[in-house]
Every structure is written in C-alpha cells, then in structure tokens.
Image (cartoon, rainbow, N blue to C red):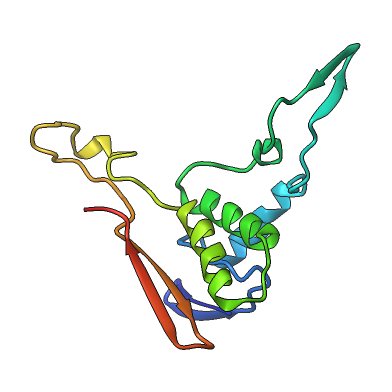
Length: 152
C-alpha cells in the first residue's frame, strides 16, 4: 500500500510492486513502468548484427538498459527490477543479507551530483548535494531493525 498526499488530498493506492520512492505521484511511476517492458534478468551474450557475430565477454549485460541515475524515477525502476529478480531465500537472516545487497545499489555518495545554481566552490561548499546518510533494514515478523551509516 502507498499513502501519499497530492493536491492537498490523501490518496491510498494498492502497490503491486512493493516499491516506493519520491515524486512524481505513485500512479505516474506505475505508468512509467510501461516504458521498460524489455527489462529481463536474462543475459543475451551473443547475437548477429548484420553479418557480424558479436559476443559479450562478461556477465551482467542484462542490466545494460536499467536506468542508472539517482533520480526518483530511475530509482523506482531499479527497485522494481531488483525486488523482482533478487535471489530469494527462506532463511530470514539470509533474506536480510540479500536485502542489504539490493539497498547498497541505491547508496548515493556525497557530492556525486551538486546543484550548480547554489554554487560550486570547493573551498566553501556552498552547494547542495543529496546523499545517503544511512540505510535501514527492518524485519517486521521478527521485530528486528538494523542500520548502516553510509556517510560521515
């Protein structure tokens, strides 16, 4: 379930993705998923391009079209992808380890991007930078909570 306020009204949505992020509004994110029907976790490591046989020398090519920016729009697509295809295990401790691996894909280092409208002076740091401060993992069934600092 997603609960959000837009245009001064409370909206409650069913959430078939089990993923959330910042704006735009949640229905927009669901509609945007239609632009990613090609996503799959299946590597296509060889093909023929015209008369040329081409081969990918490594694994991971299935991620080539997964959006990689830190915008909320791209984070939502990545969250749906990883929550769909992650390694599912039955042991709750191992589940948290798998979740931690997924969450690490969303860590954002300080100053990875800055707002140039507010300055870019490296001496005074008068710019803004969105970055990850911590990552929290919660197991509601066992009542456990853990966190990891991701910046100093």
